[in-house]
Image (tube, rainbow, N blue to C red):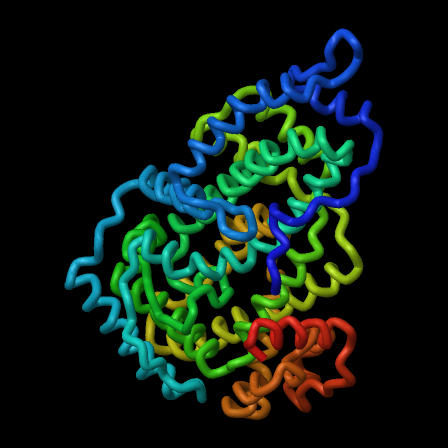
Length: 446
């Protein structure tokens, strides 16, 4: 998918000069006594702000072709992770405990699922490791939003060409910095809460990888009555099952990410919120810390509340597919751990409450790509998978993942016994199926 970015060619000039003058007046930039805009004076007023923004953002690395300063984003993440407390490298004993738990999980899963083990050894990650390993995927998911920001900014700069040329670079740079800060804050918050590599249900690593974060696992275990070793084993079973699913079902991960990208590509930016952010935050030169504050102010207000009918369909498909993944994991874990671990029932309920309450994963997706996601049907999906296993066996349950046309739909979730009896009867692909196939082909993941 080609990046449009902040550096697209500007549209043809248009709009009224008075609109630009009112806009620039918000920053104390006004015409001279003759009623005309002094471009030389304008550049003099803009220069300090542009110089400060340039020096602040350049200190964290150059922007890429999309206009995002990913170095600044990473710096925000690092500061958030550091402020959350110590996160030391796993000790040899911790790594050994994780690998022993995953090895036992693999033995149990071999009896309950048809998907093969992963070849890569299990890992113990720090929060910084999770950030580094998942960062390329987050960049890919965010880039369509960067393109939409560019379009929205050009709409605000609809003014005579010479005046627009004077103001647009400064505003483009400032907006890029604010959004980079927002992305960094969202991912920083997520890095301090996820307990495993795929905890949010999306395939974020380049290849399937079982990894647990000891610091976050310890925080998750606080207040629970189960033994620490049981909690680690339970989480290892969940993550191992999830990653074996992603590893065996080649179309699943790419389609999940393609759905998120498709939604983000069509996101609408609220022009009023964008203008308010610029007006309130750019009346003076900004330090890097003030850019982070501006990113916080921008979060939650950037995206227009209206969504298109196509986005609603994408959202329904994405929620259904995520529910099917997590419901399958729930069903498998209940089978694997339910009869082997006395603490399993309580831990399963803890995770259900955590999921129902929402959390950083939902907040991050909303802030990053405007996606208000809550897989409400996960319990229905778990019941459907359990009914399918009871009716047609484990092999038939897992064979449902062989092709996207075979997986259950929203209608199937409402009739789990019907699906369990005969599976999903697929029809002709619709327009969204065709569009998703095109996206996957363009990314070389078909």
